[in-house]
Length: 198
Image 1 (cartoon, rainbow, N blue to C red):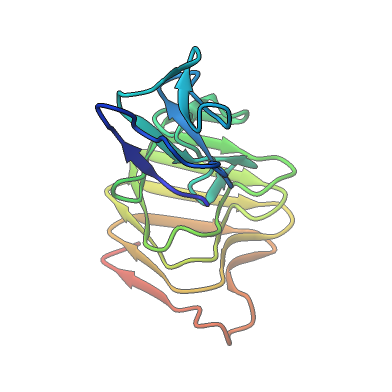
Image 2: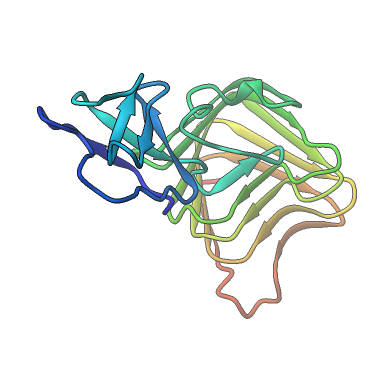
């Protein structure tokens, strides 16, 4: 369930089990491998896999422009509609790196962190997020840092919407909207920490 697993066995990498239930995760390596109830193993072209099998989450727990960030798209997120610039996510360090990125989210939220506790958003250059909804929504403790600039402009909601604590370190942050920077109701531990930031 929403898991990352790597398994390798000289006789069978994942074998001799009645079933393999993949909930919000998939076999990503080897390409085309699947679990066979007949073979009771992970197979590729009908043969039991004895090389490394990788199971990765379908979603890492946050979205950009309404699209789940996954093991398949995380290395280059510029392919998402409305996203331009150099943007990638490293699941090992929970780091989303943005360099001269423009996200035009239109009728959806720009970035929403639903489940990644300790998400680090690292900024380089000039980064701009525009939306009719929220530009960035934080449900789990996160940090925005780096040497860059982040401009958030919402035409109908929050520039930055916090349900929990957020640290902003070293960056220049501009937030504009119906609400510039807002918590949910001030009772959910929405703590904004500013450290060497503009």
